[in-house]
Length: 318
Figure 1 (tube, rainbow, N blue to C red):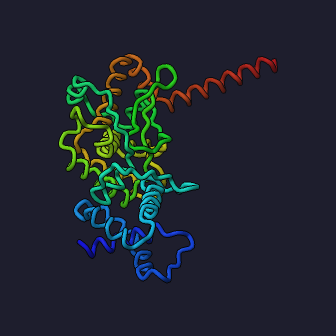
Figure 2 (figure 1 turned 30 degrees about the vertical axis):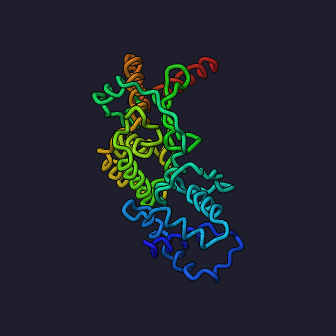
Figure 3 (figure 1 turned 90 degrees about the vertical axis):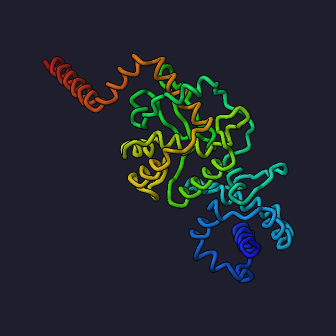
């Protein structure tokens, strides 16, 4: 454990190095550079976690500014943990002295999810009704119901909700994701951590962040029934980037997560979708039919407008 902790500390120090850092002074620099992907994967595995007290004690002996190095490491990780992008400046990290860090995986999950302590307004009756709700609501089906998918601006996993858009439409917003093998591994291990640390996601004392990763993954799983659904999510910007898992591999990955436990964030969204479906059932049926034949309708409308234009032109000519 001591040697593994030393290796992890060296990795954290390397990742948090200042711009004028002299790489020649770092014996493991070349090794870290050439094996960056494998190391990033291995240190996030739940079964590989080392008690943070050991890591913290070693770090305090290796640098004169341990807090700044930890904050810089977290900021660099947050910079690309969900998307293929970099910020103009690294995200600001407020170190929470009250948080008892269990290990590196718990630390990174804590800052990725956020630290909101609020509970979601999901009643016991809603939770009971959710158990009997139909979960067949793929991305294409939601579009047919008049529910638009969109990527939220906060990029926080717990921020998923169904909100009114215009008068009769609704909008389902959630954090965008550029899915690749590394991020898939990050999310799965963080979900496993939630399952291990919170026995009952729907308990009265459970906060929304306690099951945020599981809720996020399960909602994406619910949205993906076919490759057409994956394409719809990419079109709407919820799944970003052309580099990463293909539509087929993304579908297979999320299909494998169907047995995840339902959390409060997921429960609220499902209740909102069902309420929308029930209250606007007549409108949903009409809109769904129009949506399915939208190409034909658009072609017919275009042809009709063209025909009318020709008739008007001929009348003027005569």
